[in-house]
Length: 197
Image (tube, rainbow, N blue to C red; front, top):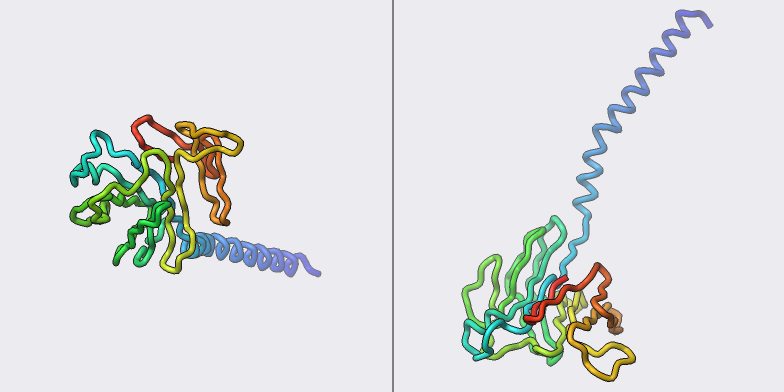
């Protein structure tokens, strides 16, 4: 092979490699965007104010100081129409025509009020969440378990209830208990009936 042909072959190989590298760089952002497009929404119960601060006098103000926060941790919005939030006694709130934007939180109050993007109201005249123990369970419109938060439940092996022992349902019918334990991190508890992750 002559020196001229060899130089030409090297230039052709270099041009092919450069074109391949350019195509890889150009398609990389598209594949990253494609990954985000297929991201699964993650909706969680992020905080619970189960014991309304002040006197539980059943006033609407007192009722609305009792709430549960639902957070969408993904970028995409999630249609919550038909989803439910219920306590251990089966008292259920059903979301009606509500879409939770990505990376936002909505607070569901117990009493009456005007629904907004950030605050929804159950319209109850009675406190829903147990001050000593209860479980808030979130299900989708098909009744499938999404998340749940428990507070004040007895730990395995303990004969008494201890303040601050939190359990978390894992969705398979089991119930995990522990001192401040949670699959995504620690629970934090204030002595004012407020529970958050």
